[in-house]
Length: 118
Image (cartoon, rainbow, N blue to C red):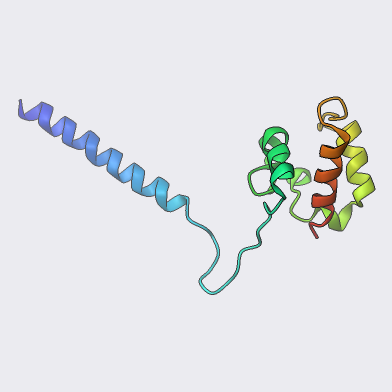
């Protein structure tokens, strides 16, 4: 009986420790007194399109999940809005085309928002 109780206690303690570690890892990385750059500041409709179509490769904060070329945090500094529209429509490299998946308005909204990321 005692052995079962210790086993249950051990599992509960392990669960508590893991929960604490995971919650601590969810905190921001900015230093006190500094302001984090809000990369996910898209208008509601554009944010919805991004979350539904782009987040799996480009990340929740535009940080990129498939290598440095998928980081969009400063994409507007290296690509014009027209270039972004073209890439969204036709794809490039490992990025698939979205011209048949997104409307022209959705592509334009994403491109305008991303072009402002400098």
